[in-house]
Length: 348
Image (cartoon, rainbow, N blue to C red):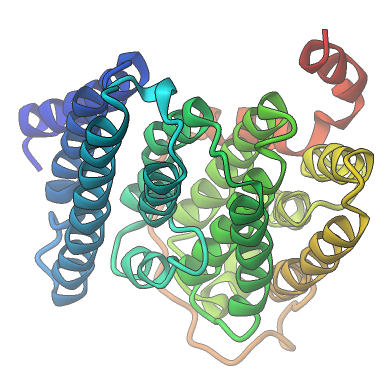
């Protein structure tokens, strides 16, 4: 892609998110979300491949449906209450509609079906943008409206955590596994949103760091399915040794960074008297952990001649920068000891 066009598209992505962040009026927030959608679509369709075009079309239709629902709900709110302010959503009808529209935007279950299909059709770089940056603007709106229906949030959160764990179990495609991982993590964030918004932000941030590391590892290995991962030890042995730690951090095992948000969320849910919800969420984490273990096994515990069946791909030396990967990997593995400091910042 022409670097000038790429720069304009990335600027559009940044501007759309910034407009949504800065807006206090629903029309402006909607405009920012639309700019976001329109800016990422050429990036998704840049490889003229039927899968990429199909993924772009599916993405456009779901995002357009979510944006239309959001606009309809905000107009309904203005009609019922006379308010266009984002924080003045007092009526339960527009509040529920907006929550569901934003859930469709970010891919929360049961409105998640588009996410694995879309992510599977994209290259890893655009997939990374879709899994991280594109979640920011809708999340900013969810945090601002503080949805009044707490039952709806808990149902959305639990369903996402369970479906995110269940859906990834029989997948062999890495991008679909990462999509289900994204759904499960979003479920955890939504579960604790009404009790501790700062904890939701912390979970979002750690999810971004861990996902960034995972996508960069797969990009360095040019891997899109499990079989390709099995031969990666010949190319980057040190990275192959560290990757299971990154994956297990995504799964939330101590003593890795990914354990911190899950630990704090379970603690907060128990404090709020939601022990059954916390138990279900913890059990759903076991489902996710299984498919991360599958990836770890395929990557570092199968050494020739016992590796998985599959032809060894022709490997060129990678031109990818390794500094971002090194930084994010260190953060993915080593941040758990900072938990007391982070807890102090969350609860001043």
